[in-house]
Figure (cartoon, helix red, strand yellow):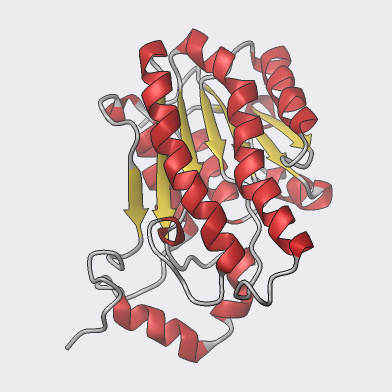
Length: 253
């Protein structure tokens, strides 16, 4: 299956986790991929072994709007066009509102919300030309609340509605905007959670499919939303959560 032949994709947070899985999936389906991440060493390791003629590495912090401009410019210079943006880079911090410092809150919002804004704003003129699409990584935390994740929940709630608002405006230009909304996913960001068997067991019993999601499964959903197979889909927040939302978070009776 080569749904992305002759398509250029820009993936943020591409050095690990969902971003790396998305980059690999899209490469497997024929895309040219610009891999953007803040961690230069991890990005180089992630790109090793990937087809160098179809991969471009870019280093930068998506909270800085210049990073977005630079990445889009680099995509155009190397590959000539931009067709898809995967807005995925994110950070998280634990704590309720009394435990969340102003610095932590501002950093989460800068990356998870302002970073998505900067990337989409820089990419949109090119996506209008190609009638492209944007796929964002939100979270089930953007559709409902979690305990002890105040800043992260706030940011993902903003992303989920950013998708709806942007989709309405972009549709007149032929650009689609959607999101995947994972739950507990085994990535570098969740290593501490993965290492807690009791916590993992609690998630499993609330997921009808019985296991935390894997990054490759989420990347498959992203590839669908980015492809022409989803040409009639926009403004959607798609739970990719092993059935957690369907169960309302309740364990089996």
